[in-house]
Image (tube, rainbow, N blue to C red; front, side, top):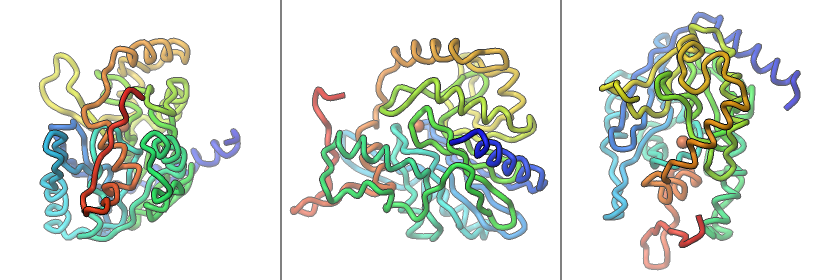
Length: 307
Ligand SMILES: [Fe+2]
């Protein structure tokens, strides 16, 4: 992407933010995977988007459940909202998406970043998914490109490509609220890891700097919280200003090389998420389980001594 395109995209973000439209956000936190699912809506038109939903999965039993997603559906129905979008910030590696399950009940368009095709290529090969697994993003209704604008009801919105955690991460700026996925976490916790296939700490730093160039009052909604030491409740909302001033990894003054050294060193100490294997196989398919085999049963694969 050229500097010019970047500038144009970011100008559109600024004009969306200046629209003075304030969407309402209700968050559902999943205590098992530490994931925040946000339901954002335009109070004027009652059109809504769900950002990053969760399907429960018990890896020992091989069982799925939809209690968390059911709460989201119940809230949308009870609040008389119309679901317009199911937005995924990226192919999550720590929880399974419930987006198709929610879509079956409430409609709406399922969307993710256009670079999903790169993630599908990487994991399609790793899991030897075969030709039945399309690697062109066709499991989604819409693929967003960097700087692409859309509307949530009457509220202007824009999608930003913010790679680093994965190559395809997106942030969605809707009115004065930005849903930034796994880039920044709460100021006292820091930033997302950058060591998954296709991840890049240097790219993550640049994406974060771009997000932190938004006006300081911009509300930021995060995908996860793990409670920083000394904090005893979960939190998922902060502001650009608070992150610039206090983020323990990337506050103002932290340079790119310093960040990359910290992030790379820390990532080397982290274990793989419990639900990595099932999450990736389901989420690369837009939240659908792998196709059933001849006996009618669906399976999750585990590559041995490979990753
Ligand atoms: Fe993630």
